[in-house]
Image (cartoon, rainbow, N blue to C red):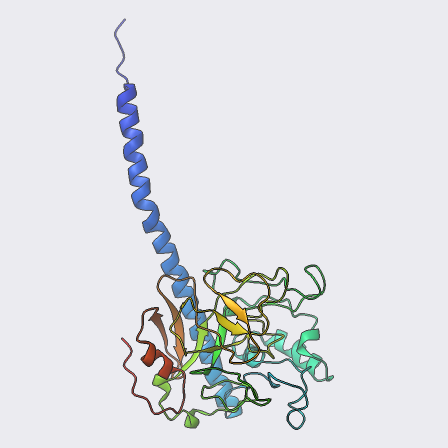
Length: 314
């Protein structure tokens, strides 16, 4: 009977080793391709949002309020803006312009009763355009309100509007208004007010979400935005490890989004899970990927609408 050819054990091990090496070489390329696709999807989301901002401007003659009430003490300004229960922000005003007309109609009806955005029955509705799928927490709905499992504060998204090139809240009662960005408390900014030029002024960026565990982490919390979690500042470059400063970040901030509790000198930095940078939308409607090691002076200047700085981003 003729002998049949077969692999020796050594040959089999060599083949397995070669396959392992090929897989090891291929896997990073596959992951890089996936992340590139996610980054582009995130960029496209920002593009849709900034176009919605411009459509709002065309319709209303100005950009939306950053938030509808002030960050600080109630009663510090004349009505109606001292009503801390309003709880609307720029994101709600964009809904009709990002294909969320039915949701906005229900929300508008709810708000017309004098109720709070925080009491909107559909506040846990996830809006894909406001999500970056590179973030493991994208689509966050579970928040802390007396403990996980109690009534929640709604959907949190991955995009924040530019309030300032520095802090967006300091020590005075009305300090959350009259910032140098495009969106802040009770803002009514027009394109004509952006004297630095719309191509030199940031309007929107990404942020990283963190889970609520033993307390609130309010980044991206659109239905409860009074304390500034829907804003960002350009005072530091994207993805810095200097912690954000907010008066509600008592949960478990993830490593890439450190945060400390502070009720003055508040700011949030542009952050993303993309490699070495974050997508930032400009007031001219364009979206750019800004690298983490961008010139900090140039990036800071990008946050002001009327600072008169000369910007030279790469």
